[in-house]
Length: 391
Image: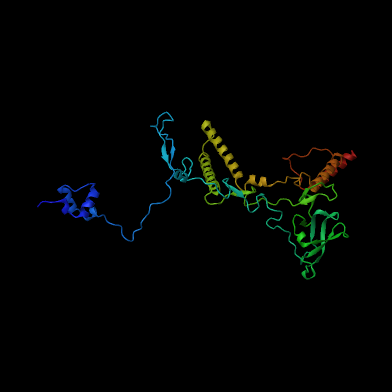
């Protein structure tokens, strides 16, 4: 039976021609293929009805720029190098990381990357206020009569006052706050009424009779108003060890508390190593070069351990740093009244001793037997002085 292309179905011939790129079906092989071809070849499977159809995005194609290639196979001439195509939108999305870092180092918004923040307990001053965590003076209206107060500014010529009366608040008659009646201790005729709100202010009044060395002073004492007293700084803040700043506690801050913790671990590990070495070399003798080297090593390690202990928070260095008032000073460079009185007493005693009231004699050495009591020593000196006068 002869075959003919005209006898084949038109839809089969069209699909075979389109699939295999044939312009006509002029051979038996192509005809037989068209007749026996599977349905998935001649008619591809359509997408299911519930499938999501994704359309081609209508946005503009990404801008393509040319970047110079720095490969080893690039020509020596820079003008002859073949640039490579890069997408700036993708390049901008890449995170800039440091060499060897797994992730980018972002600046902490709490500390700005420095790793420390202001101490909230002391406000960054390093020392507590005059009353510690109590910002105001305590005034008990039930027992305020008889209490003593010190004015930081000279009030009617005086600074020390005593409470002799009180006046409670009477809002119905237009008196919103209570007041106290103070009298000068050195002149009872000088009195003044002070509002309780003003009396609670630590920058204006201090509870009790304060001496000159108990306060800091600002201004010239020769002025009509005199110098102005201010409270002395309180104890060093225990939260920041008197530094005024604490490590940043924000999570993810690489320079904050995490770094301090790692440094502390390194210091503790070093201390343990030093102590082990000192204990291991303690039994070795000091003879020879090896013994001298071991002894020198122990001395150096002990010195370093001592310095590390001083540098710790709350150590001796921190206590010395917090003690701003030197001995014999009131904090503003002036000597306190107590030291001035003791110096006058010492001068009088020295003058009396140099006048010859006490005879010159050889005082006993430290290794000699000391007298049993001071009374016997004075009696002995008196007898010696009387015997010298009679002679």
